[in-house]
Image (cartoon, rainbow, N blue to C red):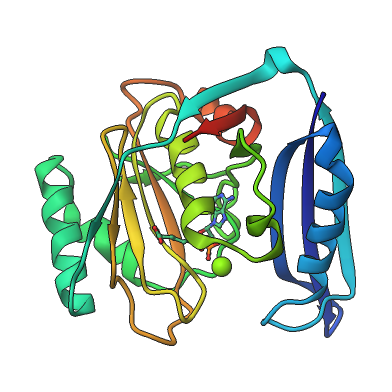
Length: 238
Ligand code: WAQ
Ligand code: MG
């Protein structure tokens, strides 16, 4: 039997609950208790400060509802400067026939969203119901349990799982990402062909973080895509 475990931690600042951290896993029953314990710890200790409210949600998952996907191929492009990183991103977007100026402009602004922008590449409209929140991609993890990644966030592994789920969504052609962690400069662009890491996509110390999911409304309905991203249970095989 498998379970989804989700944790989100927040802190009250001037009558508002501010998001501190969140994480989720899909694990076998025999790893359930340690997973809950580690996620609780992770919620309580975070560099953004200590939280005063932690939600932990545990849900049983039926085997028949699980989709298994092979992790995307990974490639790393080493660059010396942010400018060089962004130029590479621009070139890639152009080879896909996309409006790179529009997308990089979104990419380079600060957003502070919890979820991702869902961008229709047919007309460059944003399709999220709530622009300030975005779409949260959820219910994905690796098939094989790893304790190390429970204790400490592994940006790369978490992102690879999210990107693998995302790019197999109905109508999805790719995904771009920069971490909001001020000291994590590596970002990526993922398609079903590969997950391309670019080692500098923002300046050291910047809190800019964003995800943009590139969606083609000629290939699928927005409802089908959003439902898949939010609700489909996916296990990644390495
Ligand atoms: N669903 C949709 N969007 C999300 C989610 C999610 N589950 N989690 C985060 N985001 C959005 C949100 O707008 C954040 O501000 C932004 O992404 C960045 O989130 O190969 O750590 O969790 O080494 O800071 C990239 C790893 C790490 C690259 C990305 O993102 C590599 C990362 P963060
Ligand atoms: Mg972050």
